[in-house]
Image (spheres, one colour):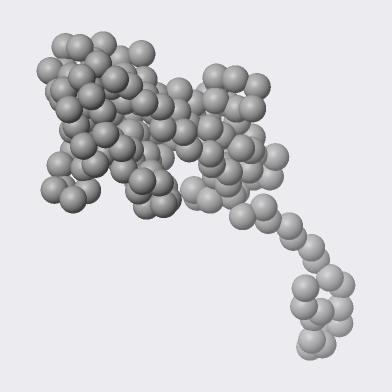
Length: 155
């Protein structure tokens, strides 16, 4: 967990937890369900808050980004000393590699970010089929025998 008291912010992220159905961990298989919990606390009254999460590559390329508000969850308010946990469930259709989870506490109506944690957690994704890039599209290949000049069967 982050030492948030020293940040001196009104609303701040105290922890980001990445977990599978079996509990906290950082290694997943491509396509597996992943849960991200973002813990937000407050030093004062903060209204109309949302939590944004993102996943980036080692090269800081944005792979994915969403927020509680964009997913249809109402914004929330915090009183002094209060905390909330915002939970996200994702299907990790990512190619094998190392990724980073980012989290932000944001107030959309005034465009204010209260706190940002760019590399809060690391995700390592393994895939059983080799591919390059970011997404795992679960490729399958076949080769059909045929005579030269004859149309090849289409999948």
